[in-house]
Each structure stands twice: as structure tokens, then as C-alpha cells.
Length: 113
Image (cartoon, rainbow, N blue to C red; front, side):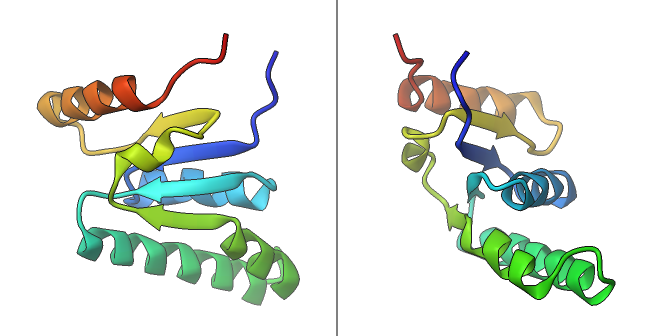
């Protein structure tokens, strides 16, 4: 079994942000993708707010918050997922949107031999 170190999360709504946060807090390198810069900024703010609240409530230290934030990166280009060990799709429940995403990911993400 291959170790998972680099995770990609497609979608940064509530579900995607939650997945990205759990992965980053677990020590994984996380790249989050959204369709537009505006949606990406909303997702980034959602993650920052969630991690900050967790630190304020004493669930994590400020150092843990900062470390998790440092493990998060953001993009609008699914092509940047080529180096990911695992990609998780968390977009709107729309078959056409999901199909388009998986068509791109199928070309970008390759399984090691």
C-alpha cells in the first residue's frame, strides 16, 4: 500500500473545506481547487475562519492552526493535481459538473505502476 502524503480536494464549499481541514490538521499536504478565483477566496476564508475558531476554543493550538494553514494551497487549475496521491471530489451534486471534473482528472492524475 502506498502512503498518502499529498491530497487534492475539488470543491471548497462546506464539505470540501471540512475535508481539506481534516487532512491538513492530520499533517497532509492539501491542494484545494475551485472553479473561480472568487469561489477559491470564499473557500480560503472559510478554512481560515474554521481553523481560527478551533484555536480560539482550545481544540488546537495557534501553532497547530498555523501549521495546518501552511499545508493548504489553492488553485483553479486541476492540472496542478498531477502530483496528488489522492483526489477527493466534493462539488455540487450535478452529474454534468462531476463528469467534466472526472474527465479532466482522468487525464491529469496517474496511478503509479
